[in-house]
Length: 278
Image 1 (cartoon, rainbow, N blue to C red):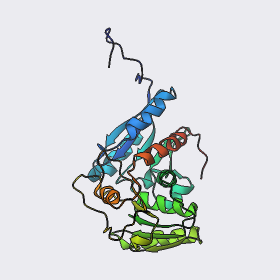
Image 2: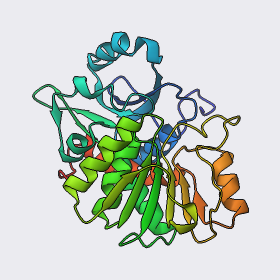
Image 3: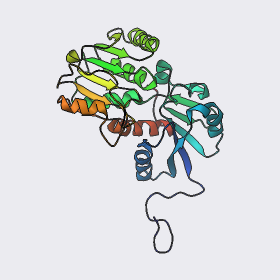
Image 4: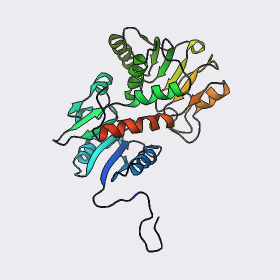
């Protein structure tokens, strides 16, 4: 927008001095992060913007190193499907990123190199609590053992989840995650497969299923009871098939939008060098 003299209207202003953050994914059109992050950055008066960057998965290893070479790029947010593939490009890993084996944020260090960490779990636990879930001693089912699912599993265990069931089309991924969660948090009974949905307190879809309006359910939801909190981490304008089914069952539910908002401030603090390791 511009005024009658052709000058930019008050608000977001980009000049040659503006620093860049990017969000990298394939696809990227569904990302709500640019709106959320730029609202925060603008409100804080920072001369930095976050832009969407579509990197085709088939060309990731070709394109990503070039991105890191941009002189005015200070950080990247990483989304599906690159949270594990980006690991080799991190010259340093913080605790959660190391435990999970995947990252969703990279920051440029003043002395050179890039440090990575994972924030998905922090956002999910916050959303679950906001929905009224009692996490301590509760039972949860996670669908998906990729980067987001792993971060969520560790975060829920940290919050005292008593029983955690993980399912993934790659059973070895689910088994590895369950073992690592139990090793790190022995009080959490982490297992694989599909739990009795009538007996769980929290159901989380951490897969890309639901990002496309034509997607079906990520798992059969027979037995889902009204008291179960349901979260589909994909941020979408319309309810996914899972959230529609959850609403029909009377479940309190949410998509990934509140999770993105909860993460945004934590990720920005990390990118700006202000967040302690966790």
